[in-house]
Image 1: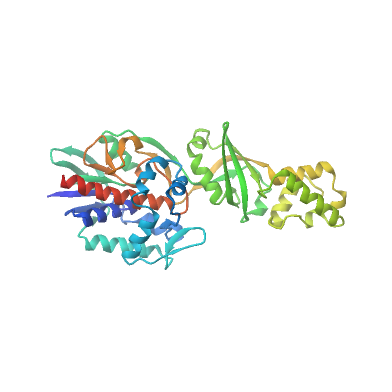
Image 2: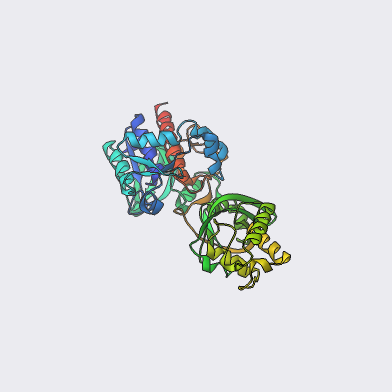
Length: 408
């Protein structure tokens, strides 16, 4: 039997591609998943809540959340963006909610509802789903493709949709069909620092302006950062790590992080300290601070790092000590020695080069009948639902493209 389409990879983009292909008019579709469970990234995403997409509706702003693939995604999102994804799921019975930061989750806060929605749509569409069937080989035939899976099981298909995410098997299969591969490196990870006196601040979250210097290259970001027992994490750090992913990898994750803890310029910080000193001369510097937004533990850690006397009163603060405090608050430097465990369900930078894909249909420019969706390509987003949005979009466009290819 020859299937119209075999989807290699039972993740978000794979299910979206298969469902869209069938709803467009394709007849026989199979999904082959190498592990024992489909949609596993969906299940564990967002701590089991599944950050399904983001409410960012403006395409120009939306693409700024993708360190790689911004140009190509402009075209893709003009056809199927965050609003279309939101409506697509709601119209199919999955109730969603938008949180204050723009992230979109199931109303139930359960990723299982997303899995149930996609699984039932696939089943009702007549899509056959096989698990624990790792595809080991794909070869061209005069009718399309022959796939050899675990246990020497053979399948034949007119079209292939390759959407294996960051798993190396997909890149290996694509290479065997003529594609080149951009070596994957981790994206979205925390930073480990050599600074010990921040450990007392573990768990502190604060809005800050940060600059990352990696081998003469500079990256900057403003937003929430989280101090951990190893160093730094939080949305701003993760975003910075994504945009600097390749540079950091090339430099063995050695870098310098400069933090403006107050998001204020030096003169404003200096003026506020001068005024506070005048009005609170009898108070102990360690026990009182001019900046309400700065947690006490962080204030004390910063003072300890520049050797301020624990009994010093504001009235006795010298000019040099004051300048040290100003510098520490506005441009504190930390040596980054390595990356922490990378997260957001193991997002990587790398994969199929974008110039080898036709983004009108998601078809390979090298191998006719071969299509791509999701993270198997060199496209990745930051945390906040953007990676899933790329999966829904590329899967939907691939499904349409595959049907169009089959009907021609």
